[in-house]
Image 1 (cartoon, rainbow, N blue to C red):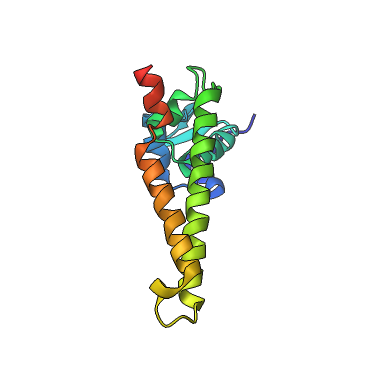
Image 2 (cartoon, rainbow, N blue to C red; image 1 turned 90 degrees about the vertical axis):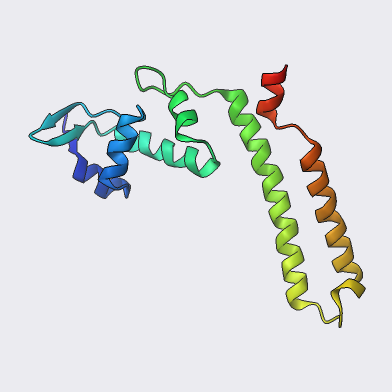
Length: 147
């Protein structure tokens, strides 16, 4: 098996060597040995780094991502947590779509005053309802801890 040194991993993953050392210190990845002063990694580290990047993009902290890897480095994905995160992303997508529609309307609306525009008022009402609902709802992780 051909191992990759830290420079190769950095070049192939687009992640700086300092971040790779940090990920190793956090237990997200592991080098297999050192060749001189350079860490050597198994090729599978590239998949692990893609999973870490996907987790970061989804909004998980490094600690949460680390908890998704078992002691052997194999994935131990908590399906309920992932489903909750997917639900939260769905809500965020809806909220962002409403905001996008509102901004587009404001940019294109020919009305002399947006407060006189029925569509603008409707979009503002919708945005306000979502904002109030979000404030009242308990986060899924908080429900689990409380229950």
